[in-house]
Picture 1: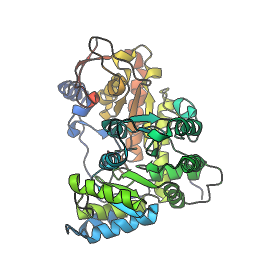
Picture 2 (picture 1 turned 90 degrees about the vertical axis):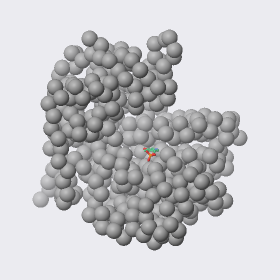
Picture 3 (picture 1 turned 60 degrees about the vertical axis):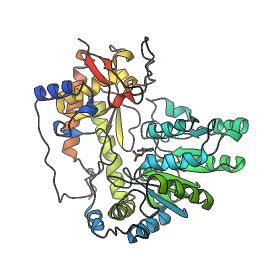
Picture 4 (picture 1 turned 180 degrees about the horizontal axis):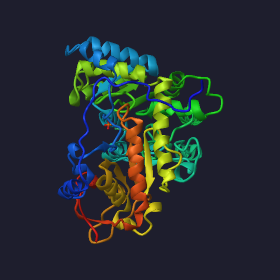
Length: 458
Ligand SMILES: *Cc1c(COP(=O)(O)O)cnc(C)c1O
């Protein structure tokens, strides 16, 4: 029998109750939070699509692995198991555990990036950009032209603009200490990078003698899209494709809160022994001894197990399908999204849905707030609240896009949860002309979207 339904490839052993609230309760809760969704208590949220980072459900084998954790300060068996799994997957000689992805960024950039450096990437994730800029360097996005067109449906919108990379290295190569590629491109809508593009980046790096480092938080989702979309890759397993991705580069940083199936954790891995020794010294200074790197031994065991599970084709098929299914619900309701849907999230296009709200009145925030007020669904604004620049005495410089990201935690919500979110989107979409914008009443200087306080415009 051929079935159409792609079912969740797991059943449920432990449950966590959801708390239902009324619209009146949510209005009070959001007002008390300064109309900022980051200020809400988790108990006041029904379906939490704020992020897919560290919010996944561990498997029974991961919970079992926790019990095998060896908490020895030095030389722990858990580290040996973690190191073996990571070496096997990536092929890199030196495996350095850290407490989460941005710690790997800080350690690597402290060692290789200097003031005036230029660090190219398809698109820097926000913490990656901040850590590059913290070293006094320039974080340069060299995304392919298709990637910049939100509505275009193309298979590999995370690809690097190879010509632009070549030009950068030819003209200002002495300022470039390394080349980064982010798999999948999180800030660009969770779009994948093709193997062909990664091979081309490798060739350019070889020509100019530059190391290539992957920011590989979603390496398995990327491998799945390569398997599905890239000519000649359909017969290879996601695991084999993931192994090749890593072997095209000289090292990687991974936030294991994503495709590591971990609630916390990260790693830095490189082939260069001398660089690894320097990074381990910084690690000891800021994270911990090299056989635990700021994590408990049991975390390392659970993460090692997670890395073995995440390339399972049944899981990845279900994962990609979940995001596409949610996007189809939005389209059916006439709510446009970034195309095609990414691996970990659906990005609603508030600029297209709410043309009556200008960017400085924060249309994506208006949409995110209404999804919460109407249905208790929490997403995140990715627009002028997050990326607009506040200049004293002037209106904000608007962000290029006004998006609401609905990120799907791994193995947490079922199809009926997604159906419910689809209904909420449809209801909000049908009443879009009634939504009103917001005004910022109080904001910090940096990363304002986390703590700003707002006021609804009447
Ligand atoms: C999440 C993420 C990071 C940072 O990782 P944390 O674990 O949140 O510190 C870096 N790069 C990408 C692409 C990410 O998605």
